[in-house]
Every structure is written in structure tokens, then in C-alpha cells.
Image (cartoon, rainbow, N blue to C red; front, side, top):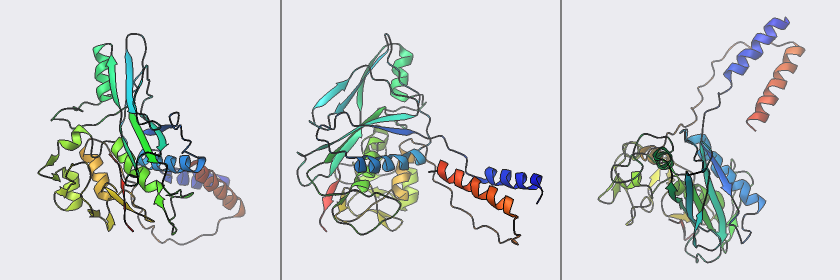
Length: 317
């Protein structure tokens, strides 16, 4: 095969690789993990849960930069002490949520963890105040008419006194015992993103059910909620799995986000984009490539592969 034809083949393969989608980044901060709960494996599993949402949520969030008269103070529950604390002079990069995470041994035996978005105080110019509330969005994020959600970040607290299963590879699932750390991380990050807690969530709650249009379509009707309205009712399922945002997790089991959970993110104001389902490739006549083309193709694929490289309660088993 002439070199020009090899180059053309490689160019077509490069064009076929999926283009990167702009996404949010969940930046985890362990500075308040005073118990040392977050070992390297747990940090890796939490990062995997964060990557799931980074690949799902495609919103553009403006930066919050404390400087001069413009000052932003975040407020969270300290994961280590459970005290309410302030984070003065906080700056948050564009398209980023800062999530403070830690373990705590005082949550009792009926709580796996809890999470939520951070509060804040802000002072400065009107433009700075508006940006802190909306992060560049156009819809209201508070009050009874809230249709968007744009937090600066939040916190996660995990029960450090329990038996956790930390999966070194969340893309596979083997039998295990204990509480699945990945499942709980997904659930609590769902709360950080506003599920069950945002004003735009409660705008769509009426008579004990959730009425968001995307959730209605995914569930086939209004979705029943717990009495507090902050979770799907116990046992609500979607696509053959108990939904991630119901209030319990069976010991030794995993729950990932279902179409219903994703639909609720859409309803409360996030832009979500699921990976496209691959189409079956048409069968074509196979023409052997000469050795040089095979070597170049293998190099391209290797490079591409390297580049790609509140709280939930336990349920009785």
C-alpha cells in the first residue's frame, strides 16, 4: 500500500475517535478527613464515582474568584467533626465543583454516609453576587420557581466504623461482602448535585411524588418519594435495578445510576449526555494490510487507548 493511502487510513481512524465532551470536574479535597478514612484505594474509588458524573454532566459553570471587595465564603459540615464551618476567601475554578470528603465514626449503625451541596455567604459587586448564585446560568436557582442548580461544591461524610468494600476496578463486579463504597459515593454525590435537596428538586415535588417531565417519562408516571421527599420511595426501580437514589443499600450489593436517576438530574437543571449506544458496524470485505500499515495502525490504537486511559441507610441482607 502506498504511504499516501496509509496516511489517509490513519486520518479516517482518528476522525472516528469520539471527540472530548466539555464536562464538569469534581475536585475532591481531603483536608478535613481527620480520621484518615480516605486511604489511596478509597480515594481512587471516589475518583471513579466523580468521573462518572464528569462524563455525564456537560454544563458550563463560571469560576468564582474571591479578590478585593468580592469575597466568597463557603459553608459546609466538617466531615471529621460534623461541626458547621466556614471557608473564607474561597475560589472555585470554572466547570468545577469542590467536594470536601472524610470519614466519621459517630454516624451510628444505620447510616452509611451523607452528602450535600455547600452553603455560602458572598459580598461584593452585584455581578459577583449574581455569578456566585448562578455560576453563569440564566434560570433561577432558589425559591419556588427554581429551574436550575449551580452549586460551588459540597461535602461527603462516610461512616468509618463500618465494613466497606472498596473495588479496585468498578468496571467489573465480583461477589463481595460489606457495604459497597462505590454505590454510596454515587448516591451521596447525587445529593451534592441536588437530587433530593435542591430548590429545583422540591419545585417538582407534589403530593408525595416527583413530577419532573424526564423522570415521568423514564418511570412511566409520577415517581413516589419517601415521606421527607428527599429520596425515591423504598424499592423504586428503573431498567431492572433498584434506583440509586432510593434510601437503602443491601449489604453485598451494588447500585449504579439508572435512567430514572439520570432523568432527575435533567429535571433539576443539569445538562446530561449519555454515551451514545454504538451502532453495529457493517460487514465489509477484509483486505489484508501490508506490514507497515499494520504497525502504524497498532501504534495509533495504543496511543488512543492510553489517552482514554441526606444519608444512605444500609438494608438488611
